Image (cartoon, rainbow, N blue to C red; front, side, top):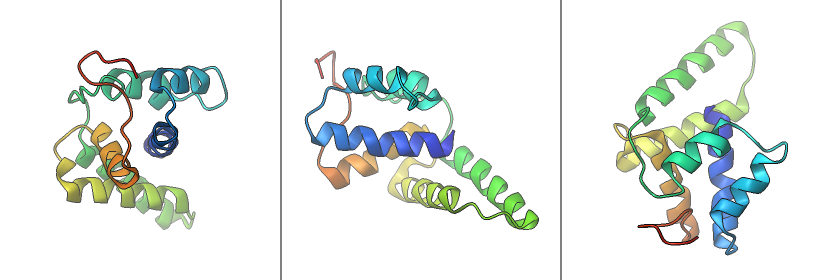
Length: 125
């Protein structure tokens, strides 16, 4: 979940920067092999309308990823992608999103790109 949501955040911010419509990007992703919980549930319900409702904190997702990484390390299994995901979650927490829903981590990417995914107050994307 954590890896797919971070990857989806990256792709959607690139698309937003290119001027693509959020709903159209999600439709394409969800009709292809890019479909995930992130693109079919999390982003449409939490980010596309810019509501960011509290469902699961960044801090809790970070804890789960760290537990996974600890077990992988104990077993001698490298997980470089998930290490990067954990770093992104740590940056999100450092930016003040620890007690907020992890959807807020997309705001880091948006800030870096100077682009925003979704719509505000019922605006069309």
